[in-house]
Amino acid sequence: MVSIKLLGIAGSLRKASTNRGLLRAAQANLPDNAGLEIADLTDIPFYNQDITEKPASVNRVLAQIGAADGLVLASTEYNYSLAPALKNILDWASREPNNALLARKPVAILGAGGGMGTSRAQYHLRQVCVFLDMWPLNKPEVFASAFAGGFDADGNLIDEKLTGQVRELMRALVAVVAAHR
Ligand SMILES: Cc1cc2nc3c(=O)[nH]c(=O)nc-3n(C[C@H](O)[C@H](O)[C@H](O)COP(=O)(O)O)c2cc1C
Image 1 (cartoon, rainbow, N blue to C red):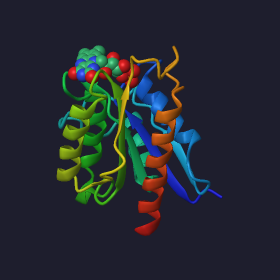
Image 2: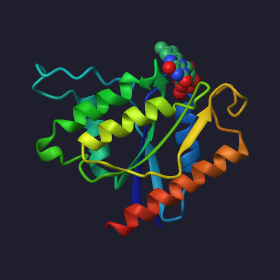
Image 3: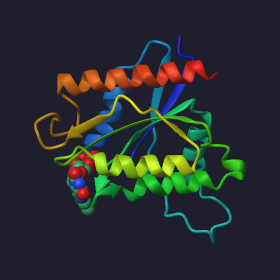
Image 4: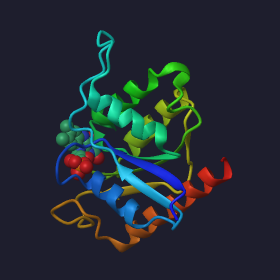
C-alpha cells in the first residue's frame, strides 16, 4: 500500500531528458510503501512578482509539492549551475506563506549531465535548499553521465549500476520521510 507520496521534479524540459529518465527510474525502484509522481514544468512561466494571481499551471505543481511527503530533484546542469526551470518552480513555491510548501521537506538530489555528473549544479541546489530550510539527504550522491551510454535515445536509464544507486537513494529518502512523520 502506498503511504508515502513523493514528487519528482527535473530541471530539463526536453522530451528525451535523461534527468526525467532518472525520475522514471526512481519511480520504478521505490520501496513498496511509496509512490512517485513526476511534475510537468513545461507550462510554468517565470516567476514575476507582478503576477498577483498565480496561473493554473503553477497552482497545479504547487499543489503536488504540498501533497508530497518528499521531493526528488533531478538537477540538470546548465553552465555549472542548476537549470532555470527547477530554480523557477522552487522560487514560485517559496512565496507561499511561512514557506509552508518547502520548509522541512525531505529531498533527494540526483542528476545526469556532462563529465562531472551535475555535481556543480547539485551543490548549488543544496545551497538553495539551505535557505529554504529543506532537508536534502547527504548520501547517497548520484552523479550520472548523460553521454556515456547509460541512457537510451528516449532518456530512459539503462545502466544497472546507476539504477542501483537510484534505488538506494529512494530507499534512503523513504526512510527519512518515515522517520519524521
Ligand atoms: C545551455 C546548456 C548548458 C550546459 N551546461 C552544462 C554544464 O555546465 N555542465 C554539464 O555537465 N553539462 C552541461 N550541459 C549538458 C547537459 O547537462 C546535458 O545536455 C544533459 O543531457 C541535460 O539534461 P537532460 O538530458 O535531462 O536534458 C549543458 C547543456 C545546455 C543545453
